[in-house]
Amino acid sequence: MHLILLIACLFVFLVCCYTTYRHFTRISVADVPGPESSSWLLGNMPQLFGGQVGEAEFKWQEIYGGVVRIRASFGEDRLLVTDPKALQYIYQTSGYRFHKQSERIELTRLISGRGILWADGDDHKRHRKVMLPGFSSGEAKALLPLFLSKAAQIAAKWKDIIGATAEQSAVLNITAWASRATLDAIGEAAFDYRFGAMENVDNVVGTAYSNVFMDTFGSPSDASLLALSMLQYVPRCVREFLVDHVPSPGLEHIRHTAQVTTTVARELVASKSAALLQGKGSRDIMSLLVKANASENEKTKLNEDELLSQMRTIIMAGHETTANSFSWAVLELARQPKIQSRLRSEIRSMERMIQARGSYEFSTSDIESMPYLLAVVKEVLRFHPVSFNNFRQSATDDVLPLFRPITLRSGEVITELPVPKGMKVIISIAAYNRNKDVFGHDAHIFNPERWLNGSMRKPEAPVGAYANLLTFAGGLRTCIGWRFAVLELQAFLIELLSEFEFSLTPEATRIRREACIVMVPTVEGQREKGTQLPLRVSIASRDDD
Ligand code: HEM
Ligand SMILES: *[C@@H]1O[C@H](CO)[C@@H](O)[C@H](O)[C@H]1NC(C)=O
Ligand SMILES: *[C@@H]1O[C@H](CO)[C@@H](O)[C@H](O)[C@H]1NC(C)=O
Ligand SMILES: *[C@@H]1O[C@H](CO)[C@@H](O)[C@H](O)[C@H]1NC(C)=O
Image 1: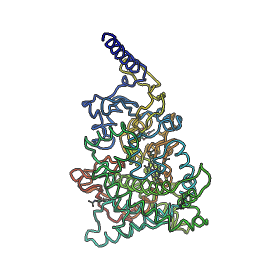
Image 2: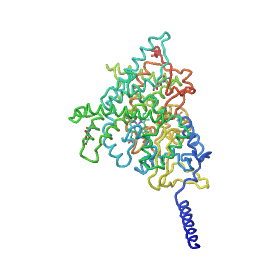
Image 3: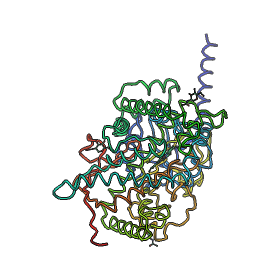
Image 4: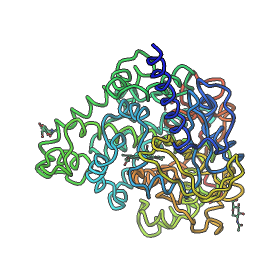
């Protein structure tokens, strides 16, 4: 009897020793300063995900710097990172050692399947290798006429609407127009396919996407934050099952969108693959994908599920992102009429130069020689990054280098931060884009001037693919479509600003930066109406030319 008791005591003692040993040897980030958490169950998550885009992150970055310790559910430590050197390490230097978070990746799978956004490591390398040739700078440049014509289509419709009003101006829901035009643009650009969303408001794909992010990710309840936290503790097959089957209105909407886009992708492939394999239309992205499906080489092969997922990924990633960026651009121009009219003058004077050489259409070199347009687009992408955070997790114990040293709670100052295996990192794209070390003391002010007056020197720790912004992420997983997006934004601004003047409505003075997976505009007090940007649009006068 005594012997059994002795053995039991010994066992408990050994377990205690082991857990204490683990506790002290496992690398901990508990000493990194960060906000207090008022709840063991949810940590700082309600603060982080409950407000508008950037609200919590801007405040914490101001107080604690480029690396902030925050708490998730059950007291788990996470890091919020906006330090340029740490980001460079996470996105580029570490290779695939900071992979996507296991529970978040399920949401990506739900939205766009097992495509490039979902894949990691060697799989991701394979997906990316197949896709890259379709997204080069040459491919993007060849799309300028398409982007201009989609914007011209909007312009024609707006002129009809405005022409029929007594006051020669109308309040228009900008996001609705932009999202239909960008859906049509990506269909033609990537698949040589006409969604017809501009012509037909009830187009199935456009309708399926309408407010899908808002319904699924807008203002998450405490229960859904907790559910997402708990997903990480269950095995992958259970995770997948739950995400695919749990009843929830938001998830239902996204499942419906997934079904609609998969059907469209399948029909498209069926109608075109024979011709594509014979080499017709071999330049577009879809033919790259169909050829990859037929490939014998394991390093460049996509199976059929991956092929369809890739098409859904491109439709999703290539449409609402650009549409919402355009909406934020126009909102900012409506807020600042001086910037708007200066940009319009630049566009019109370029138009006159183009006409003088006997042509009518802008070329990419015309755009390159429009400094103010380039500056405005950069500033919009900096200030309103529609993809505002990224989630990563370390695959091994690792060390994050820091651009700006941080002071631990113990008082120790460090320039490198050791992190344990499995450390979850939240990258705030929105807050990095306002980092004063990178963008200057007035980073919280919208001002295109910063791109023109020589204050943006060559960065010491470059991160993003474009203008050192994190808007298109960075490194190995940089947005593959960033050249398309920048050019499309430029084209839309050229066409629409040349013809129209945008001004604020009373609702537009109450726009919220709604935090769904994509940052969308909503009106304070009218969030139940979903995404909207109601601006007054009138024909821009030509008197001052
Ligand atoms: C202003 C518009 C856009 C923004 C702000 C944007 C932003 C981003 C960001 C932040 C990522 C990284 C996501 C992550 O790693 O989790 C990304 C990836 C991606 N984007 Fe974009 N994007 C835009 C437009 C486009 C367009 C027009 C396309 C396609 C035509 C596109 C296709 C993709 C794809 C395929 C990926 C996955 C890349 C990979 O994982 O290797 N994006 N985008
Ligand atoms: C504005 O347009 C969006 C499409 O982007 C649509 O979902 C929303 O319902 C529209 N809002 C209003 C008030 O018309
Ligand atoms: C993709 O490849 C599989 C097998 O390699 C084949 O059965 C299927 O028909 C292909 N799909 C298309 C759309 O070419
Ligand atoms: C350039 O513009 C930015 C943005 O307003 C400002 O912060 C900076 O001080 C300016 N630099 C110079 C040299 O004028």
